[in-house]
View 1: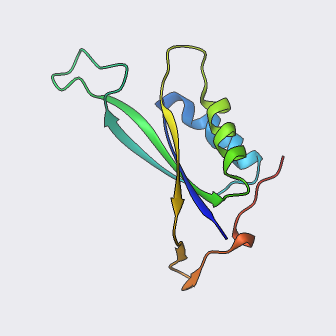
View 2: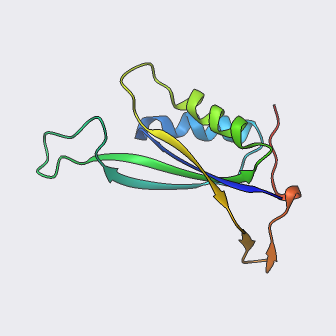
Length: 112
């Protein structure tokens, strides 16, 4: 099985919309972190000019990766200046710590 990791950096206000969209399509496992950085926009009110964003990580099978990535982009899009990005990378192996086993196809779901 080919595994993929989706890393999305979105605006803080888009998290709830993205979370609900993923859960509505059966994607219940993801990680959320607060990150700081600078892309097209900077925070001119702070000395380091860094902006706070939300980073979302989703592991999925190659079969579903395009659908999940498009769902994230659609639910995070707010119709203004570009906020965020979505990156897709290959995963050589993914293991469940609590079950001491390799992740398999049955561990991923996506419903349309």
